[in-house]
Amino acid sequence: AHLAMPEGVGQFSTLSALVIEIGLAFLFLAPSPEARRFAFVAQTFLQIGIALAGNFGPFNLLTTVVALALLEDSDLPVAKTGGSFLISRAEDLVPMANFASFFFAVFAVVWTLHNQTAACDATW
Image (cartoon, rainbow, N blue to C red):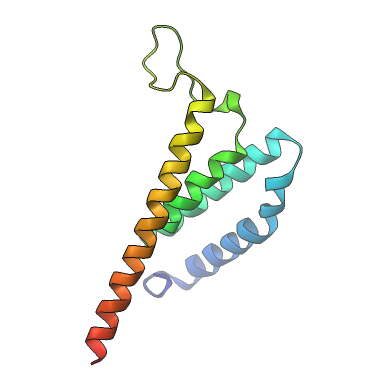
């Protein structure tokens, strides 16, 4: 995807990806909720940027779902009495996140096997 972009954009996106994935990854373990919240936002924007650049692999979405663990319960939408949210407690997000992670992991494996099979068929 970087081949179709101006050289400066490609260099900036590469630098941003390296800083976020290597440097800010240490914030995942930070005791401060603000630091973890910042790491979540940075990681989410990185994954959105990768998807917009043309890499539509399921790992972008899977990484974003797993990054939800960086947020505090108070950061998540919780149903209020008479509210319109479907989640009654923050703890209810855990099974949904587990299911989403499993679903996207299976999808990633199937997608990869399908693409590898198609690539192998094209070479024969």
